Length: 79
Image 1: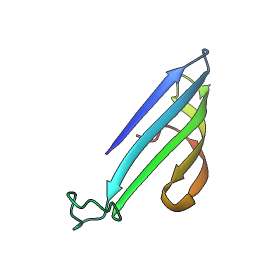
Image 2: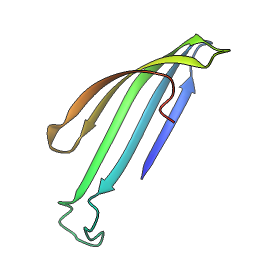
Image 3: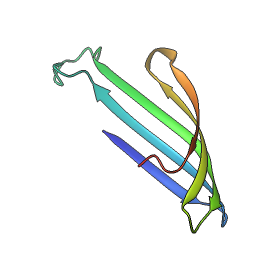
Image 4: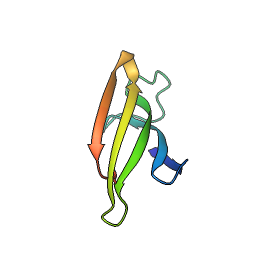
């Protein structure tokens, strides 16, 4: 399950935030120990290179369970 929000702050600039949670296939959602649950969140900035071509560059920082984190640089939209 994931939510994603993109907000324009200037004509070519924007911000993006997302949060989600997943669990291992076959795990029981009802389990109260949450050992099979994996939460994550991210935030980043977007810049429009060419609006007519839908070309974007996006830099995001994401954090997850057990001190996992990553920096992503992508071109285009994630979906």
